[in-house]
Length: 386
Image (cartoon, rainbow, N blue to C red; front, top):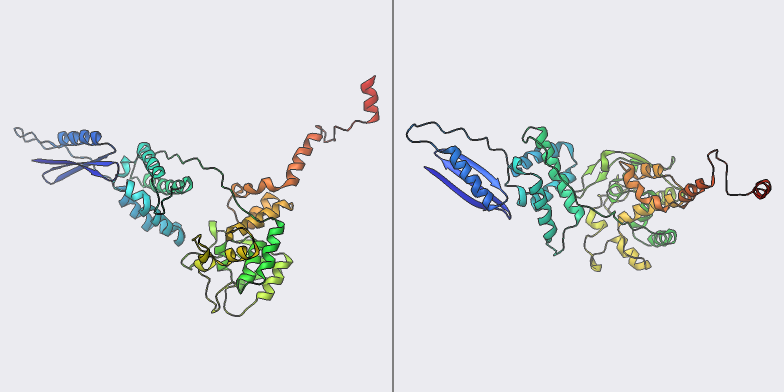
């Protein structure tokens, strides 16, 4: 006797399930009518004619669901190839959105239609704070889903990789301090308690990420050679790992930074910027995610006290890069100092270079031989009149 059922699974997933004896066949579809059709097909495939007692044809092997393979992906590939902080973020992303929507689907049933449904559902959803998820956030989720499906294809779990089209995202704006604002901030920081009195100016003069500032140790600093060897960063769990992109780099120090670090030198422990007992600075102590004034971190408090708009630590990194470009540094030089993996990230600062734009326009004043044109000589004027 065959037992079958069509049941809704999730917001838009329907499951058709047929049981004949000890054999179970399952199919997943995005619409109820498709699931009912799949149920009929499964019953026909699994029926056993009673008169001839023919053996039922074998059912297709049931592939792993996305949730099952995602668990294998996280426990093997992700933990081996990603930083612990990245692994934690992927787990949060999977639990928050991807698995509730697609986790019950077999890998082979995830195609372009299911992915587009997912994008539409995410755009229409709201977060716990009542806001809509940003396109950038959804694209990050699609990147994780794409990596899981690509690995499933490489491991032979699915025959082909479904297309994943990311949402269009407007180039992100970035805030930075102009020269006068930066000087006001650095001057105001002198009145701050340790370590902020040194940490804020050093962030302006080196462009280090907050995680790199928290992980910076005295053996990374060479005050004689005037440089910092950025080779570790601290994550949200206060664990030390290689910097973003896994690449160490050298950042040269201006003389003001060397003087600041010499004045800040302490014997409380290996970390340059630390708590009074020498322990690493936790992220929440440096910067609060809350926008309430009472929760302001040291940088936000300083901005409020000196009359500057509220900025975060990453704005100091933008300030460092912007000032370098505006003072004539090349894009390649800034890329190396910031530790970007490619020029794409650094090119966002290119429009701040007036000298490069002016040099490009000046090329129009030259002919093919490199001679400046547009200036009429006396002889040229005579020839033109004859």
